[in-house]
Length: 197
Length: 201
Image 1 (cartoon, rainbow over the protein chains, first blue to last red):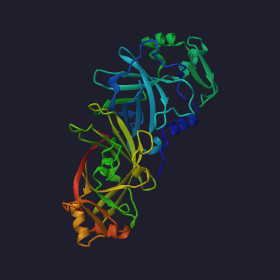
Image 2: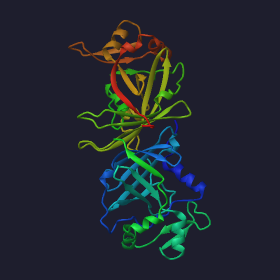
Image 3: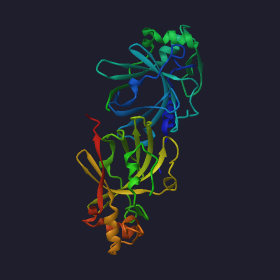
Image 4: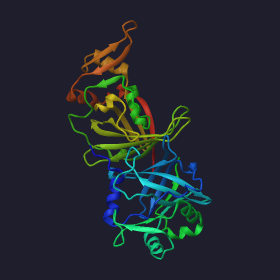
């Protein structure tokens, strides 16, 4: 039987690519009264930059404020399947998912850096949901210039500098991420999704 | 009767009506071959009792398929998801599938019979973007067993003599020969209809 490799395969790809998305040492939104965002729950279809179709199923997790997202590529292989868990923090027209890569049972996989990956999401008036990761170079430059508190550590990859972690206090982190200006530290959306349910 | 705990996937519900049990999966004598017509995303129509169910069918290299089934939260029911291993075979002009639950909400199958590796089988048709799955009809199979057309044991109610379940005890070659006949689909009854979700739409 072909075994499901879940997010382990994704992490392996990141390691090979020598990069891992910037993480925050604590989730965004903990002091800002982060709540579950019910608008995300359901099934979405996305197209990535290579025009490859991916389906995302956002499911609530039992006994948890977190959600689970199951990403299934259209016409892909089991190794392409990815599972993440996340909490959400909504700030007006945009919000963040605090993402951890997970095994099939929702427990975090071991070989990932500590902290959570902030994913910027926006829902436009037509119902399109876009997802974007922080731009690694911009974040590293901001940390080096002391505009952001952060550390560098060799974990998954990260090039010569290592992977970057934003280590602002939870309150400072929330103030920072609540400001629309922080979105300039994010790369272009890697996925645009439309609801299909 | 085996009752699947894996409510996430409509296909797993095949076992709900498994009043006909087979000794072996269908197609072992000729070998399984993935049917590419099944690849992709399928969706069931929700009704008042059941949530919509999404079923991703992924073709593996070893002529097995993995089915990922997902049911969102619905009317007080928890969201659920799970996985199946599925094989397909063509016998004559008839297409069959065998499915075995491999995961329930990220954990192992909760049903003991699935955990032990037993499977459920069905006849199916793909017409355009519609997948229709048919289950063996207990009474029709019982007639074939009684008539000696296939080896098996018919279990009847002691008082009413009504057929309760049928064990088809034929081995793989005999089972496959029986189901390769042109009229074999008449042994089945419609179970579920799934619609393809086309990625280009």
